[in-house]
Image (tube, rainbow, N blue to C red; front, side, top):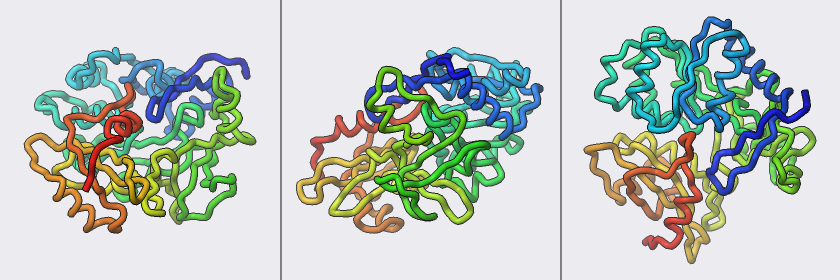
Length: 356
């Protein structure tokens, strides 16, 4: 059971991917943990939409449905078109599917969406990025019978370590929910000491589905996997009700004028602007404050928005030192095959940009 069964490569959001070693044991346990969480019966017709070399396509939802004897549809990942996905959901009577956030947005924005009958679809699972408020509202309006489950995890440290149930998705949409069965999550400081509720620190995860290490990378393995815990490199905090909020990647934290600024907090505010389709917050060099906040934004089609309007909007909802000093408008954000924004690409691209 402890023999390696496959290498699953991490998403390229901060640099080069690493091969996480998955054993027969971790694979079995991860499937079982999902079965416990969502009580799959074997009657499900599941569908995977991403590339099979990615954990969200091969292991999230797909493996537990097969383990229980259900039906699994595998769609080709190249040349993605939401109309093709919707057609398969309709014709094959899909009950459970995993759609990355960008796929959900394409579905909601499709001019052909009303021609598909999706009455058999019960649950959409999603992860990688939070679903923006307008997306939640549109899903509820167009598909009131469909439940949305948002998940959080990482390839090497339990791919679904926490999930947000449909019942909590509106009230707690700023969180990723609560830990999965058989999963422990704690928030630690740089020395590994646990932090109290409400304090931002690094997320550490312990479960039977934590990888045994990185293939051919002993130094990175030793730094990441400590006493059975996976140090994720993600920043987060728990609230009083036990819901986990992600504050961003540790490498994404912006240090400006002696203050720690968490990209996810600013992104959450800007996601709520009715002219913004997508946004990514990065730090750019600043001669005075070391780093400055830069917002890279994709506007909704037909919407007008200026840099000054974005900054003024942020001033109304955030402390002054957190507002962007630079706003850049782009047609699209660079993403991994699983839909995650590649912030290192943006940082490299806009490292030398001037700001006022």
